[in-house]
Image 1 (tube, rainbow, N blue to C red):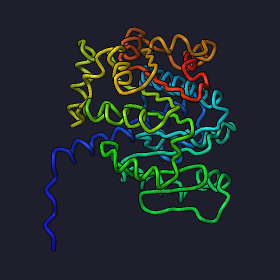
Image 2: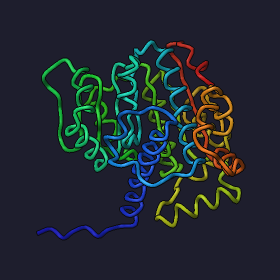
Image 3: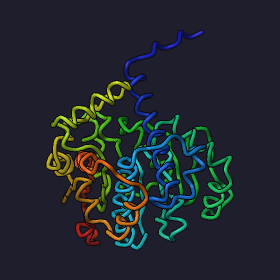
Length: 325
């Protein structure tokens, strides 16, 4: 019998990163239960609402979801949905089902995550009819591919892969018919920060070299050099969660630089406090009435330490550089 491979520091680090997927889904489940936004599907990935989350956490997730959706939906409108989406490190995200409900479906929606997370998501879809039914409705043939770590239908695909292994990622996406000629949107939320700067640069470079008309939207930490940023890092380290790519999170400029140095034509970035102030303010007023927030300063600090950075290249001249807030 072959000897079992020793458990390495990398395994521990990867396991800690995988656990952030549950954190995000639990927080989203709680915030939607409070009425911050509507997501009828997140309940099928997290059994219970769980323990109370602080109001500033709920508002932070609200800003994140609204900000990402604003840019994503604007891209879909620019391309008239004649495009594909690749969600990198998608976790238990429910965007595919939202787009189906809102009639904003791209030609195909791809998700990539660790094989273990992909397997969990596929299991949930297989066993929960409210998740599987929309998928079947968008699939025209009998040949729905479903195995342990991948699911492939006409309009939706889940792939188990390591984003640090670019050749492996490229092979799997090609196998499931990712089309380099189609306008392509890449999404990543708190994913690149867990890769070294070299690894994340190679990933965003692969995206810019492979796709001539594309957009990349990245949500993650920023302004991490100050005391608040250091406390965030220490809190994650206590959970064995090392932010391997934190040096790219120094500023909005360093976030944009990663894209501009790897072949993207345009890049822009805003911290989440700014995003919070430019998303529809009537809805912000509504959610601010949901819970009393004692420490407005804490919310401000929290939002100033996250950002959305987006980059475009536009050979087809669709006007992607106009997609903004």
